[in-house]
Image (cartoon, rainbow, N blue to C red):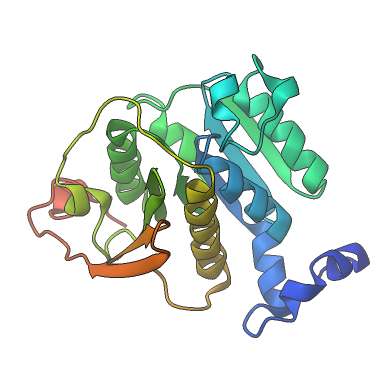
Length: 249
């Protein structure tokens, strides 16, 4: 049952067909893992906290820099030099005191990935490098945890939802390609994509709507266009395409 305060706080989303008080209670029970507290992680975390997710675990190993502040809206001038997870947790707790925030200052590696995501209902991919994204993709499939991918470049962005055992995964999409180096980004691009990732997470948790499974959503901010591309599951994918790449029930 929701409290009187929760009914008032979430009144507008409780009104949405398919959510109601039962859906809001599902959000309160949910545990969401967010990999990265930067450009994508900021809007995703903010809107998931605002929606009433019960527990958010945010993992990042960086400190806030001045050059982050055009897009990483969890942080501000006063946070420069602080651990991103500390300023992020502070901001999220101010936004919604009903959300438990696990702020973990660590790098995501092969040694700790499974432990970090254990017990969580979904993973939001807010990383800025493909090797860690691939690691999280593989971990999500092995642990049978839905994985919500997002990426940005300049005014562009993309998003895809991965349900282990049912849809194409990140490796199916990128085929193991790796890009390196700094990339340009305007702050509104991760705002759009991070918001889409949060939308997909809320839809998954409440069981409403159609997810971006087997579809890549591409956002072109300069021309203000959205495009969809069908992504087929690769039967030879080293992450999801053979029995050894998936955890057995």
